[in-house]
Each structure stands twice: as structure tokens, then as C-alpha cells.
Length: 264
Image (cartoon, rainbow, N blue to C red; front, top):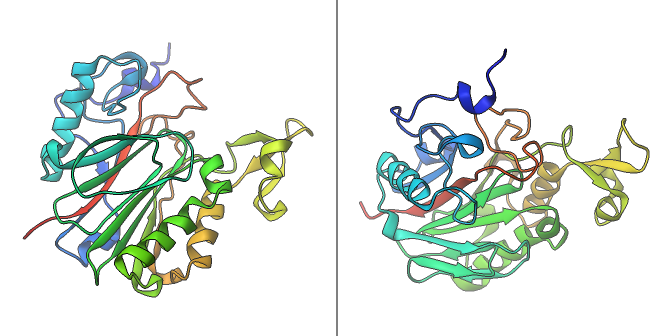
């Protein structure tokens, strides 16, 4: 019998595994990462590095996983900023750490605040304006993408921090790719026909390309193609690395994508 994905995961004794965008090499004060599911203490469908605050996992396990990840990243958990996400387009301008509600994007120009979004198929998009030390973390599912949350977040950075999109960098983290993301016609019609194609399994379904949709929103906002980095991973297709809400029928953990500028 083949072991399931959770059983094949590394044991809790290994350090948390996370992905760091290449942009951080250029800016020593910038911390940005997307966690994986590897290197935590959670069990079962949440194995093992589940940091989802609204999952059915044991609360103490989520707390331990968060502390492990923060320790490995060199930050303090009490400096995290996060929200109970609602698949909307509201943007929080953060001035202090803590847990909020109703926001799917967070921006700040305060040092030592680490902005977080949680995903398990939706796309995390992180933004950095090096001139003003401003950052953003965006949770972009299909509803947020249809509401142009990336465009709205960049506009908020322009208004509040005087960010110039041409000087900003962006990272699109791992999410569910078009090959695995089947949606209804009602969802597909919210987007340009260029961003979806009919499913090979059902003529009533479409395969939606959320990654390209958010990439196009970055370009439309004025961010240069050369300043956009995209994760090559599909959350659904890499069960050893990522949680996937769609693949795991809703009972699964969450990854976190976080970004912030630390004091040197």
C-alpha cells in the first residue's frame, strides 16, 4: 500500500520549510516567504506545518507551528499582522500588529511589522516598494481577483505611501494553476475569456488561470515585467509541499505568506 501524502511528509524534528522570493537577496532588510506544509507538529490532514488560524486543527499545534516558522525566519510572532479573510477587497493599512477581521490585503510602511495572508489554493501576492519601505500582502482568490484586489492594493500604496509602481517589486506565490482549477461558467464569465478554457471533463465547466489574471493586474498597475517573480508551483499538484483546499476536499491546513521590513 502506498502511504498518503501526510505520512510521507518529513517528521516534526526537521526545521520548517519555506520558499523565499529571489528579491530578498537584493534587499537585506526585507523578509518575505511562503511557508510549505513541511516541518511542523500537526497531524492527519493538517500535517505538518499548518498555520491556519481558522482550521479544525488543534490550536496548540497551530501556535507551535507558527512559533517554529517565525523562529526559522528570524521574526517574532507578536509582530505579525493578519486578518480573518473574507474573499473580499478590503485593505487594511496596518500601524500595529495583531489579528483583524474582514481584510484580504494589508499594507504598511512601518518597520518590524510582518503582514500575513493565509492560502491553500488562492494566490498570495506580495509587494515591496524599496524607496518608501512599504510592503503589501494580498489574498487573491477568484472573488478577490474578480474585484481587482491587486490593482486596488497598489492604488492604496500609491495614495498612502506615494509608491511608484515602476519602482515596486512583486511576488506571486504558489496557488492552484489552470490545469487543476475547474470552475463554473458563472465564475469564468467574471473574467476575460482569454483567462479560461473549457474543461476536458465537462463542457459546462472551465479551467481558470488565476495566476495569469493576477500577473495581468500587476502589469496593468504599472509594475514592470522584470520586477515580477512567479512561483512555478501548483498547490493542488504538489501534495508533499502544499495544502490544497480543492484537492483535499476542504479539510486541510493553510500556508502563510508574509512580508515585512526589519530594522537592521
